[in-house]
Image 1 (spheres, one colour):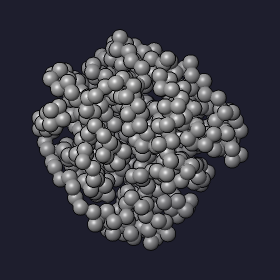
Image 2: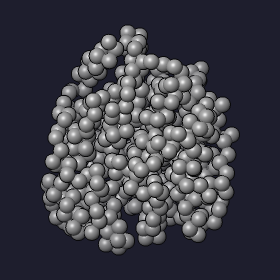
Image 3: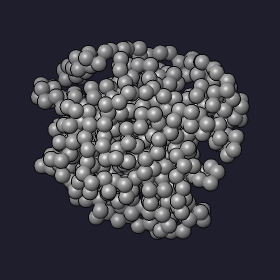
Length: 491
């Protein structure tokens, strides 16, 4: 069976079910499967499978302590009648390139693809161990993960959720989506700070041994991509996109392709790297970054340095300086050297920077390219996509679209379209019309009129829904807030 090791302590070894339950290793590391190179996905087989069948095939190869029947049960529960299209993640043309549309789920963002299946994986994993603790899921969000988590876990028995998001640093639509979520087990809290602060708070709670020792009736877990159960399901749509291009005659089997990935926390693009390791013919993974371009600098220099200004941009889900999933990539590139990773992460914590060695940098650059996109370039990209290519795209996808236009080689480019443009209507509207509409609901309606596209059902009437969550805390109040909720659940 595949072993999942903590990036900071190779002695901490579990199988996938335990890794999914824990979310984050207690030593602060992230669980990573270490036998990926032994997994060989049959591309010929992929061509004949629909999304559910392909997901069952790939996930049962990686999460192999689940039975195939258990994986199939999770897959069909997640992807039956929950997406706007039966194809789940369709691929369409945009100019010379292709869009991998990841926004047809319950909350109109790519996070839905993984978060619709995570509760089912978690439930089966938990039952397998015969545990009876209450599960408390702590999640930090830069906008989209929050609503997708709330939607996936609301009213799930014996499971409770708190979502932390940075106050005034998500879109109005994203905030309304979260704060109007019904469910007797969900909790939404805005934090004075940025996403990195929210993420740091969640990780600090996980690493607090005192909490684990005192409150033994509560199992902490995560719905962020730090949880391998959130990360691995994203691998599927890389294979599905590749298969679609082959089946539609755009490429031949075994031809390589490039994936252009708007990147913040490095989870989506890491899923692409895992897909490459297990057999998807990927040439380059293009890391497309906004003004917070710490990842682009890292890919170009091997130096990860967060001692820089943090920017609030029109692509807020990418406004991140500490990209958690990069730790997993470093673990692989270092040949699973946990001590080296532990040192890098300690340097990041104490000095705000670290530098990888030349050998790791060479390996990194064999698969990854970094491209930085300015705010003005992002706006121009939305304008160009609409008027030249007749496609309405959101600011995050626009980062990928511009990067794709900058990066050309002999292979086809597939751009990950990460969210519906209607989730960021004011930015999209102003980019294609020069019209400023402050109210996002009005901007969404105006955008629908101009584009002749339909507003996603889950976004209609948001302004008429009751605000159910309206809490704000300072970052130093976070631990006490979580402990109070844990006390209630522990009783």
